[in-house]
Length: 258
Image: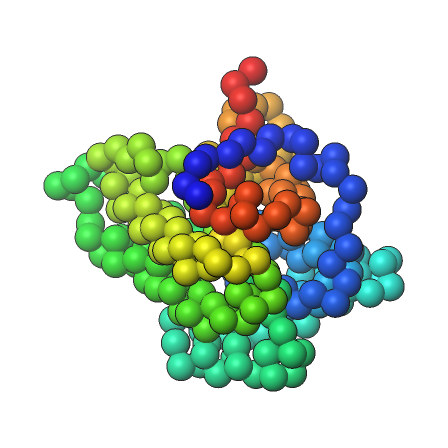
């Protein structure tokens, strides 16, 4: 169950899955990785719940996602302004979603952030506390709230992580430790779903690349970076593989060295 798997470029070439009727939550939808994932899920026919802390930041995500969904005639995007640090609020939100829609089929936890750059002694442990809450606590709250619904639906959970979780250095200790803890929590969720048709997956990237980054630095090579569109395509196609083949795995999207 814990074997690593490589994904590479092949997933983007797969036929787009039909997610009509599925209800999928994207936490951290207004971050760099959120908009392309929301669009691709909506285009595949899903009802996408785009979650974030700011209605203003979610607005363009909703607009683009619903435009993509209208092309399929099925998918649509609805907002959820929610504080993922507030577990009672998250539990209430999850219960309301399941009550309204009768199911939740997936949770993509894209809440992210980075702090670091100093050594073991020189680093500020306030950075660790910030990363702990942002990367671990929000994951715990969302997975606990949606655990049973996703299990019952034979759904998918995915987080985005980094190879640094298995290869930390002194200057990225806090970040790598938080990612490693997030991975451990996700693998524990996978273990809890071992007798079901649900799957919890860790997707590892060196770093994410957006079109805006390319425009800002047109001469940069961004070696080893994964474009957010490629990440989105890989997440959308998780339903194309049996849960038994996915559950508890790490999927590496880091492009091979040229």
